[in-house]
Length: 451
Image (cartoon, rainbow, N blue to C red; front, top):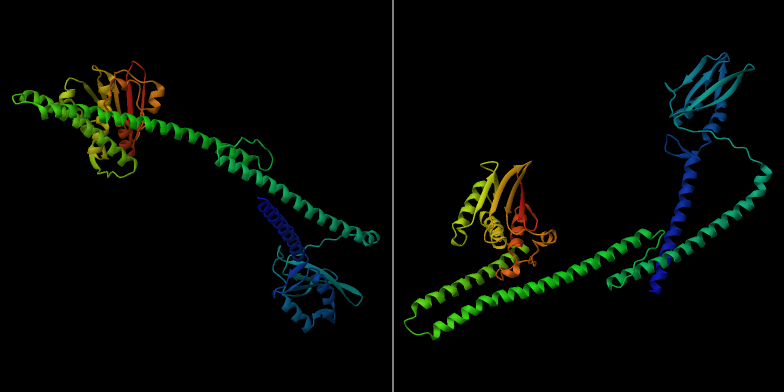
């Protein structure tokens, strides 16, 4: 840890030093760009070159009978540097021009000079194809000369202060990183204490506190899930053993029975078959749950009328001898609402919802199916007038390992029916929710997106 801290310190210090050197080099480059200009031929010269060029160009202007002319050498200089020339007579009129631009925009800079002819001054103007600004500064020569050692001393002191402050900052940052590393290690070991430090790393500590809280919440949820799973496995074990006892007992009676008891044997065989079917249903629920949870179940979609599908499903359930005395109401705003779905899977889902209402709603419980289409959404509601549920029970009703209150009266069932229904509906792109009031029934709302 100590070596790592030193490496971190020197790494930060090295970055700080590189930043300082980069800043100095950038300043030098900027200063170089400020005091140089680029000529048309691509070469760089000092930014005072146009001024000195203008002052020396006066030697290239000659007068013949009062008319200004430019020497051949002067013409070549103008051509080589892309410079325009304009000579004004003493009265202000243009006496001569060469390569003068049509308009002087921001891309040209003009410099002036004077030449004499017969004792009179003539002004000439040179147009340079570059943008140059003139800045004049007047300094106290005595103080400037005497202040240079002081300036150099201050520059050296400033440089040392920057180096020392960089080193101190590096050590401080290294200490903060050690604290952060220790906090992360404590979080992994589940022994982290909340740190409310402020400053440069305040947001990072706040994020670590939030991460620790989320991890602890996840641990609690995992423990609760583990406990529920253990309880669920215990219930499944009990549910599987329950039908085995009569199967084994009646099988032994049949094995040891005497002739002439065919009627009793048929009754015993019916009990055995009933319990075997119950065990088969338990195993099918477990298998289907595993397939849905791991995405192993294929979906064979068909474009069908959902209204007709639900009507036929309700009729099939009522034709079952076990539920032939029950009532399933039906209410639809339209005769046909088409949706693409797997009939076999949705039959399982809605059958689970309806039979769940019959089983837990009491012997007189009735179910009403309502189908409607609202703003591009297919809404299906399965409402019963049974015992109802509370808000806490509704929150966990679709949990895979949850058994609601009141299930103790009926030991049969795996507690997977509603979880399976939810998984199938979500597999079809839908959502399901439940709400109710104790003593006033329960409503399951299913929504599918339709065009």
